[in-house]
Image (cartoon, rainbow, N blue to C red):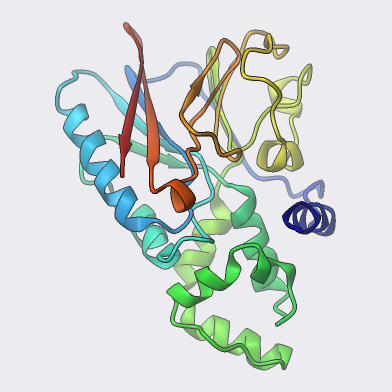
Length: 258
């Protein structure tokens, strides 16, 4: 059932259109990067994880980035609150980047083509609408569109539309889902960056030695391998939200809350 929905959504959304999302390339990175896995509407967990990250920040000198790996909405109970939090300025001396996930793309498709039968509603979308106080949807498309516009803030929509699909620094690439093997980073397409299911964590990298830091595919614990790091521990199912700290002079550190 779920696989069928996912295949339908991936096929029905024009992720290969010329209007690809922005990709961020930096010639250098900060001293410390905190990458956070899929939040999926679990704002309480995100608040607690932020507290742990900001506490860790104070223990380390140098520049710091916080990179959110996408899938902020759907499935959990507080998607609207998560977006409010991510739009606001971080509570610490840290630069935050938010990347797009496939759930953000599907939500946008619903907002552009609203329907009471849209597949997003079975993909976690109902829980997102509940977080905006929307519990009953009119069957009439125009009435539904008017209702959505009255309840979902324009700044939330603009935020979802503005999210880049990739952030790259020398040696590392941060994406929601994964990288297509053998394809240069500047030629990677959003359909893969937001939807791809990676292979085994120990598989040798085929993208010029780049290590991918990603979420999208839930795992029981954070996977750290030679080719990629998976930070998605299925927060909405497990009750555990995870992050990894990458520092110039130390091994990766896992930070989690429940």
